[in-house]
Amino acid sequence: MRMPRALALLACTAALTATTSACSGATNPPAAGGGANYKVSPTSAPAQGPLDSFTWSLYAEPYTLDYALAYDYPPNTVLANVCEQLLRVTPDMKIVPGLAVKWRQPDPRTLVYTLRPGVKFHDGTTMTADDVVASLKRQMDPKTGSPWVSSFKTVDSIEKTGPLEVTIRLGKADVLFSEMMAASPGTVVSAASLAEEGKDYGTPKGKLNCTGPYALDKWSQGDSITLKRHDAYWDKTLTPKSEKVRFTFIEDAAARSNAFLSGTADGGYMVPSSSFSQLRAGSKGTLLFGPNTAAANLAVLDFHGTLSNLKVRKALSMALDRKNIIKAAAGGVGVPAKAPAARGAWALAPEKTAELFDTLPEPVYDVAAAKKLVEEAHANGRTVTIATSSMAPEISVVANAVQAAGRQIGLNIVLKPVSPDAYSSIFVDPSARDGLDLVITNGYDNTPDPLEFYQYLRTGDFGNYGRWSNAEFDVAFDRANSEPDPVKRTELTAKLQKIAMDELPVIPVYEAPYSVFLGKRITGAPTGIAQLYYPWAATIGASKR
Image (tube, rainbow, N blue to C red; front, side):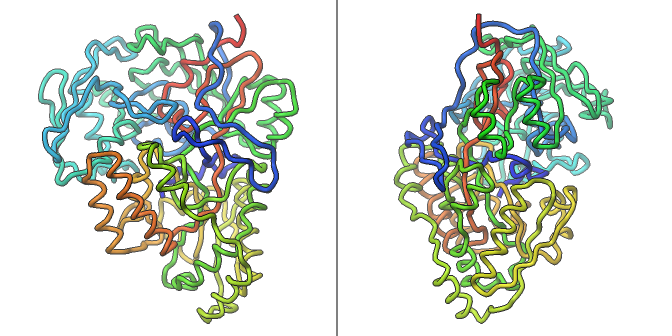
């Protein structure tokens, strides 16, 4: 259950996941609950000309620009244009070469990356294998405190084996490791700058020295972040069309929508769902939906309390009115979730998606049957506590829906309000989960491999918040993670999906597409979740010549 640090998606967006025709060949689904139909596409119309600058709205100020600590939408949205990875996830959810021009695997436990020659950092120095080794090893250093450290759990060594070659040796086969080189774990920065910046690295006081199409120009804390074009950028297919990009931070959903409508913000990802109708009806720009790998779920945090009984977990799932939840929480744009990992996460082998995901049954909505299960479990009147927060309206909507569902079937659902910071802490601090049975989560993949999501349900994993443990699941995961063939690995992942649905350590709620608003003067942006690592700002330009 990969989570952003601040549960960003539910923080005033409807950006969860939906069917992606570009990734899987599927058709676009109708909006749940009678809402307007929507189309999912990985890109917007191409830019028609250059721009001096454009302004992009973030729903919160990044808490860091340190690649090793960036575990949330705001920092990754900025860093996607500044720092790059060994591999790259494209807007249509493919993994392709990035700073590594190629990679090979001479045996299941050895990975050899050949680096792209002549890549320049923003200060003009040239990237070498030493920079890659330093960047990756820093993720593993306990002093760094990187939330990505679990991606390196099987790594035995990272060594320079040539001026432009890095060899990584693993303790056991780990297919996901190489795929994660297309996300934050694979980020490469200047080793010299890390040493020079020290504790200021990634803060408003520090500097960044990376290889992306834009360089950090200025971080005015509490106000904005400005990037400037990197003229020596190596990828000529992504030469920036704008000289500068200015990021502004608007936490209030209504104020953010007003910024779009007034033109003070040219665009932004993860648009507040409460503004969908207004933005669609207006003439100030275009609201678009893109591929996503995320789903809104209920993560079980306590397997010793009321929810320790599988019948109760199944009953709560059956009592959820998902279509009405989608109306209230996602502006009617979405579908009930069939499984913890969303359909958009099954893009690795799109030819298997229809067989392995689409054939899953729709979630059952049967209050009477759910009430009977609660009675069979002797759980009438027992308490289930769910966290809620003022962080975003969507959190309250889902929490209230869970409470209403529980009351209908005989459960005492207690809402525990917590501050936004405390809500975020639930995902990083085990002690913050004390006294809680459920939390509303946003689980998303950084890559197109559905196995990435299911790794977070392994025994002892950082993202396994309820400490759920299933020996059959663990064995099945290891088998899948040692299978190099994408099609075979996807088939093995389907077994993990089945165990998760049978046991419900996570209760799926709904999926919705990624969202982006583009004002009338700009176009060219990728529309999907790949923007977290793809240099999306480079493709944005003027909408007219």
